[in-house]
Image (tube, rainbow, N blue to C red; front, side, top):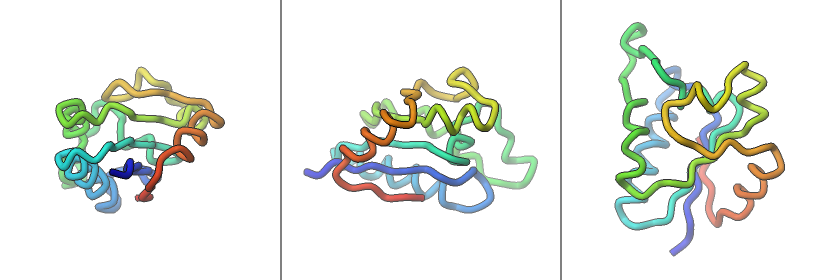
Length: 118
């Protein structure tokens, strides 16, 4: 079975892309498809702690990221450069992730057989 990679590139709540990507990750993992998640660019905002989507009448799907280990989705990569460009670090994130420099992030992404970008 091919490994599935899901690349988050957009900030949450402005579009349904983040929620759809998370739903796809959980669905794929529930069918035992090896699933890896990648966050770069504004996609790193998906994992920020203490978001309040209710303030903009958005759906709160962010807490669902905490369920990923229950689905055996444990390879979660975040681009260190993207975090630094936004004044963030790994401690600002909701879940435990692998914060990787640009080269390691690209290598992990290139080693994934199928990648869908949201």
